[in-house]
Amino acid sequence: MTDTISLLPDHIANQIAAGEVIQRPASAVKELLENAIDAGATRIHLIIRDSGKELIQVIDNGRGMSPIDARMCFERHATSKISTIEDLFQIRTMGFRGEALASIAAVAQVELKTRRAEDEVATHLSVENSTIRSQEICQAPFGTSLSIKNLFFNVPARRNFLKSASTEMRHILDEFTRVAMAFPEIAFRLTNGQTDVFNLEAGKLKQRILGLLGQPLNTKLVPVEEPTEVVSIRGFIGAPDTASKTRGNQFFFVNNRFIRSPYLTHAVGQAFSDMISKDEFPLFVLFIDIDPARIDINVHPTKQEIKFEDERIVYSFVNAAIRHALSKYSIAPSLDFSLDAQIVSMPAVTQPFHQTTREATKNDYLFQSFTESGKAHFLERSQDTRNWKELYQVQQDFQLQGEAKSGTNSAPELPHREEEFKSTFLQIHQAYIIVSTRSGFLLLDQHLAHQRILYEQYRKSSMQPLSVQRLLLPITIELSPADAVLLQALLPDLNALAYEIEPFGKDTFIIQGVPADLSQGQEKSSLEQILEAVKHENEALKDDRRERLFRGLATQRSIQHGKVLQDDEMQELFAQLFRCEQPMYAPNGKKVFSKFGVQDLERLIQNG
Image (cartoon, rainbow, N blue to C red):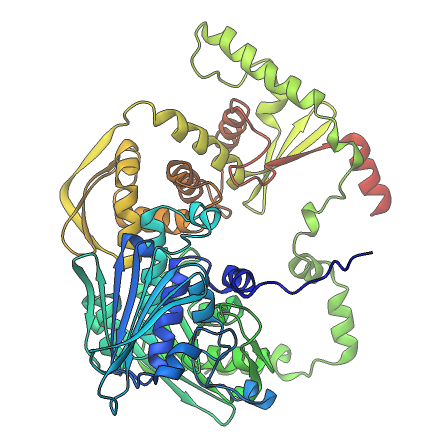
């Protein structure tokens, strides 16, 4: 018998760790920038070539390292930030686990130059595949310069899974923006190839926000300042008219560390709920300062997810802080709580709400109909809904009869002899359509149905030019650097879909023409919605940018929940859906409709 368990070699263990810590070039950018901050740097320069695949270099004027520390920093779990388990719950530095440089050195060729202010010469190290190839002295200014060359050169499978250059560059810009936003007292510079994308001098937070997100926000930022004993909230929110169709300009920082929190983002959105539409997202840059003992930041390798000791309290404070700021700066409408004297004296106001009255109200039909959302259209799923034979026969009948009626191959109309379909359409909750059939009914999601229709139309239209509506007055649109990179990559595909857009300097574009069916005044918001939809599409297929654009356009321009449809509109939507190649599913894979038979209705009534 031979033993089968052995220790992994260090270079393999480091590559495994790199898979968690360094997922793409932007991950390495984040780690190097944070190391420079922890080193006390006041000026940090990031240099990128080929979207980080060829070179990622960070130069700082921080404390630098001794020759021994320079060698030790590439060892796994080598850190100067923690020494006891208790230190994990008092962390105020950006990095602390000692895995970043070891992970990077396992999957790249790394060159380090570092010098402390008190040293006469610098230390120069070359590291490759977790092995130090050389160490020598050199001349260099105090601070540290760390270069990552040929990322994933020894892990070709990982390198092949990287996205397009524009996508990877957009992720780098996102990481740079978050770090630079959190530390306005530090000067940051970003050079992409030979071009300076950002050159930000040290200053106040508002100055940094304008430098990163654009000067037009200068008069649109509302300060937030709510110090409490439990949590302190500070930063800026945008006035309601700065809300956009994309989520790009939303930043939460906890103890200066960028985090993602849908829960807290909802708290901000609730404060804006009466001032912006449901499909718009408010701008905010908010810093939450809290005792490190009340949070756990070591729950995810990227450290962008944290746990609060009591998330509900933080939610309440964030929501209240935003409402206070909006009210203080006369943005939110003031509420008049004074009532007419006759109303105040009415029994409904003066009499107490006893338990007996409360129970009687709960059992009232009107009360239940308002509070039990979705009760009217809740249906138990039937085991018989897997039988689609009749449904596809309906689809085939529509197509054959439509072609016979028109005598051509043009799009068929709803057949006249199927009168039951023309008169039995019912919209409920302005979101779903009930269509009667001979043996029951179909329950159809109007938003997903229209997505499928538009998606297939866009795929077909990409083969032939669409009508362009030239604008009498071209529209200028200024985007964040990350969105500008994405739009630049989408321009050829947008052009095929009747958008005429031209670059106009740094992060600025001019809209010369739009699709002929786009409503006037929707030109800018249409592009913002497209960018938002494409950013949140699944990037599973490398370079499948056009497909992502089609899905994004279909999502953005489809009929939304909440839109009232007339009978003829519902009929046309239904007919167009069953002309599609795949009517059953939306482009995102969600089910468009369900079929219910008479037996389902009987079961519903009997069990009701």
